[in-house]
Image (cartoon, rainbow, N blue to C red; front, side, top):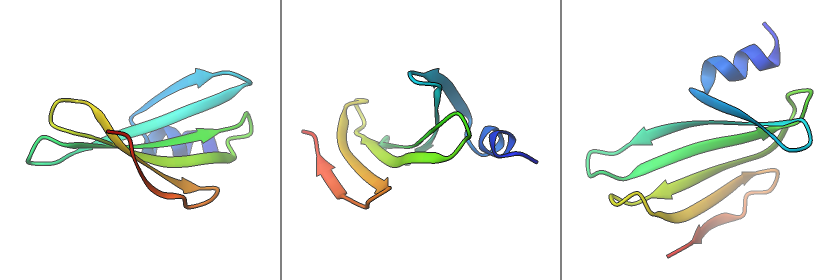
Length: 79
């Protein structure tokens, strides 16, 4: 199985973005209404360029980003 097929199985959603890149993501919901979105940006060869987590509150507002790859930058508060 190729990298694209693996990514399409693991991630529920994907879109083509600029420069022949693709963005994959899937969402995880908490019981309290918060959402974590795990996102991955890959190049045309499906090599990972960036992997990060977005945290949304119960109102659907982005409140935090945690970039994990290529460098773990820790949590960055948005609100």
